[in-house]
Image 1 (cartoon, rainbow, N blue to C red):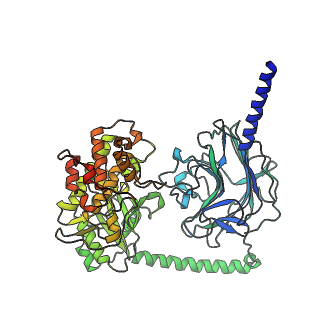
Image 2: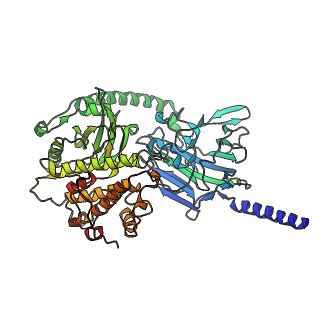
Image 3: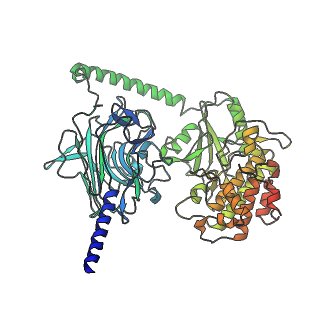
Length: 629
């Protein structure tokens, strides 16, 4: 009997070890071609038997992964892994370099709205540093970004869930007891080694020029680096790179790569047959003649540049030319220089988000007041006067649930619209924050606020205003957390007795009324449809159309048909909500989302029901004849 127990125990040990071996991963690429098992994302591609993550164009993102997700955990703990790769970063001849590249582990190969510029193509302004990223990266950074506290523009760092390094060192390698700096963006081939011990939780990172032996001492050694909460069971491993605004651009290449987990050891790389992207300078560049010519040309160029800049600033930023029709516009016209200074040159650090036709930046006026400045990217070669006539009319809108329009500015054929800054951000940001920011009572209050604002636009102002872009990102929260409708860049207005004209179809997927696609005529009813999608989004905590293609209104309708309507309420509320009001919001969302515009309610009816002044439709099945294909 004892012998049988021993045999069973041995068998279990063998099976456990075999399972662990099966989970280990190992691969090596000494070059890359179209048959290599590599997944390319965004601007990454193959060139000269190497992976080119980006070229020297501006604002690019490129990623390349091993084409399968890699098992990275055993019994809930991250297993040991090691990788070695050879990279080259080649700046454009007229550039000082760009942002660099990084080795990454991520639970999904998707970009998830990542920014280029200072974010290495990893995250964006709102997702940087968030726990839900589950992102591990080793950056080889060639740009000093003040916003993430970079030490210099040539360093190696460890990034967890964002681009602010938890540890970093200037790029160098140890040869004996001597540390020799390495210029990461020299264009020369550089080799990197990354080793993580799953038991001791130690991460070692080394680099050296190709041809040098692996340093005995690591450049960056981090003890007790527990990655169990960062790395998930399955991770995509690979590389990411990005470029900034011109001239901060460079080419990013991966020339060879090996990777292994668990008991596997990384296979050595062939460093003798690698392509070289280093651009050698001709001998003339090293001559005294070239130096003299360079000094003379540089002096002449600098002098001409100073004179040109002086006259350019004199004729543009410091002097505004005003046409006669602009004197008739209202509200206040800001000087372009004032807005340029208030937003620090429209830097990405001040970017709040995107709206119809352009980006929105945060600015601080000389008086200390904070504003939101929308940069209209549309090139007004014609029609600016008509557009500004509408903006002038919208500037007279006054309602507690609308974001006030402060003024505007113009530079050549570009327009800038200035709104009051809403310090608590958008409804979208608060609704989908990892931390539960909005209670049910707060959500219901915001929906009532938005309904009041839309009723004012549709019926209570001098003209009928159709917003055309009602969505959670365009609902902003003021200092008292009141909901305000913002971003009127796509709005259209006409007399109450006038019929709407055909326009281009604009808006956001999931919020666009179906009849708008066919007729192109924006009406108050199309805004009601968008508000219906917004009500369902707020009640359910889900996008109208999610990443998997699920249509929210169909899902809620199916629950209603099966008498399980309240199952649609956001699970993060934990049942802490008013069931009666939740039913009102969900049913109203379905009614307003009716494909037939004649069956929808008006915003007056919607506000009366939300305010308790009117009852819901008696028979939703009759009133809301929704059909799904």
